[in-house]
Image 1 (tube, one colour):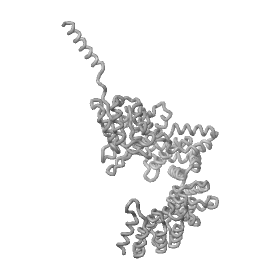
Image 2 (spheres, rainbow, N blue to C red):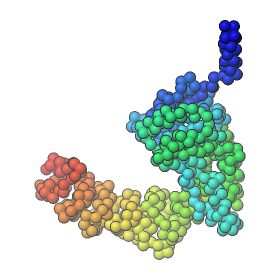
Image 3 (cartoon, rainbow, N blue to C red):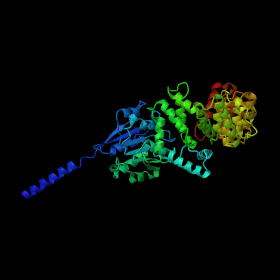
Image 4 (tube, rainbow, N blue to C red):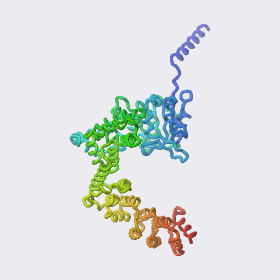
Length: 554
């Protein structure tokens, strides 16, 4: 008995010693940013043991500064779950009509770079990004051809320029994956999706399956889970690690923080901008969005005190000005060139008149390349809404500018070259979709001017290949002009019984329904619409609405 008692006492002492030597696992905080579905967060909550994990939802409904509020409360996250749509890579957002919550990536960057918010994500072990393309590795904006040309102008050989451009793309790449690695610096594991992510209602059962197979032991450990990646393998889940101080992107992260850190004085930001503009212009191209936002904040009548002097120093930097404008003139697309020229104006490198001349010259060069698009038509017509570019546009040689293309004709017509208008309008009736889009954009900015022009366009549309998709598309473009000419309306009512296309009939109805019903208040028109109406496979449509409206008018 004494021996048995001695053994029991010894065993008890050993257990006591073991409990002192191995304290209970430290509690961890799981933070969630629930912008859309809460299914993923709830899957974590019901599966992780309450004695090990505390949950904190960072989003506060109705409070726009909830991220900053979490910083001020001293929240420190060990695990972060973010749920929201992320299609274009600029922000997490909700598809619920009753929710206005959103999380721009720029706000995340601002939070992690602010000295007063350093603790929020500083001790993260894992981040779970439940949104489409959150770890997509495709570059968003890198223009390799433009970068290579810029480096060649700087004196590099073609081979060296190509190699350096690839290095810059790696070091300063702007893919979704790169941005998340920069935001979540030093985080051992970031989970996300390289393409489409499962909706919350599908992701939650997958998480349940993972946790029930032993996955709870992996959470908060800071190591990639092969089991989790396996469960989501069919849904493009990937894992990455945050940027570290030895990472090639460490310098890029420092630059990002210089752009977004609100604690910096405006003069400091202006000096940073000046130093940045002295780098290779290929690097500037990668920072264009950020430079655009920064120069807008530092210039103009509302510019903060202290920024003007540093910008004035930049304005005198003739070498940076020359290299920058060379790249702007050589931009691959017109929208990029326009933005770059706007930046040059803000920093004092261009006057208003010089800006207009440079912009028109870039338009001319793009026209010569035959590279105009519907987006370019929209940009040029918008820029010349007050006809401020037309004096400078006099220098464009319309014959040398491949003016026979629809997009070129539309751009030139928007710049005041009235002789190109007829060609631009003919684009409404072409089969090519790109040309048709350019023409449609043009007439939104420069609508049909008189009855003669309207009749001519309507007659051309009526004469198109019967029932073609391009004919319906042309009629849709016509609908927004609110046709009022009776002869033009009569041409369309004559087309209605001839066509064998329901889409064309619907498009005609879309034009007629916007017209003055008194012009159509003829019993014969109403009978014609009913008699020749093609059957609708998907229920009531715009034709039925038009018929009811004419019944009332009659």
